[in-house]
Length: 162
Image (tube, rainbow, N blue to C red; front, side, top):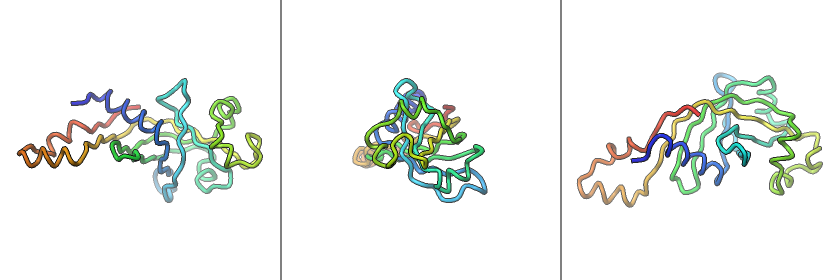
């Protein structure tokens, strides 16, 4: 049975590897969740989550003064799922842009780091609900042998502070 800390570490490792989140503002101004690429700073692997976007994106315009946001995540192999709540804000931190910049990000911005459309977002996660998903083959075998999959699954989910 994984500990809460194991579940949290598994989430951060999966996010660092897979990077795609669905991000929206919380509450009435939330709108539709949008796919975004999450970038983690190597020196701070447990957040904040950084996102490169463009100033003309509706989500960026709506969060200009900051606000509560929700990110959902599913790892590529579907071994980790999460709903993450926190504060989203715009950042013009050039040091952070320089630290996180890479060829994949550069491909989106014709003007490079000085592109006038470039907007860095900072997502400070405060809490999450994380689910670890066992291989369904194993779950099927356990169920066939009389195990209760619901009981086993409850040990692989956690509401955590981040």
